[in-house]
Image (cartoon, rainbow, N blue to C red):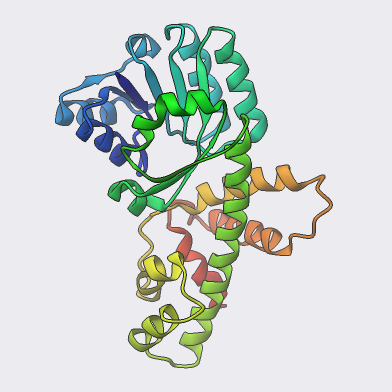
Length: 283
């Protein structure tokens, strides 16, 4: 199986490396060409300069930022991939975008799996991501060896778009946890508690969670190297907002998170880690 990987950011580059370690990676591509050239030279694979360079791939994996990027790449790949090839999209986009891409590719006999991931940069580096997949079950089985290279769990959530719908739920939970952790730790600072005693105590009880474990100590030290950027969280939450607009649900945590991450971006903190949220909670 020949696999191409497009999108070599903080998540994509380590995922591509796992594919190389599994003996599957044939070609890498990125909007910034130098990133593709550097990784291709390191891994001794091809660096793509256009969609044509993916033409011999059985599977092409996308891990890009925006709906427009996914649509653009899918349209280009539809013109060059062979009948029976599959595109897997790990980006976080709208359900509607996932369905549009599936239709575009299906017209050329190309399969599609919308497969957003969760687990952060650590999950990508350690090959322990959770993959939420939408699409045909048979198509998912076709690409399972690809996903297994960097996933701890692969869940088939339903038809095309179900992966993105699951990611919307995931991001509501993530945003809420972030809000609570940052507020709680800001309170702990105000009360003068020792972080070296506070954090392990919290992690040993019902307050334990991934964000507290991975970001608690660094945020209290004022270190906000991304992980997951505020700008990306804001983009994701706006997708969720659009999904939920006609649901009739009350989602005040989502609304608060949207306001907070918009404020961080407006203050020039868009490229900082989401744990920079604590700077707002400190008042």
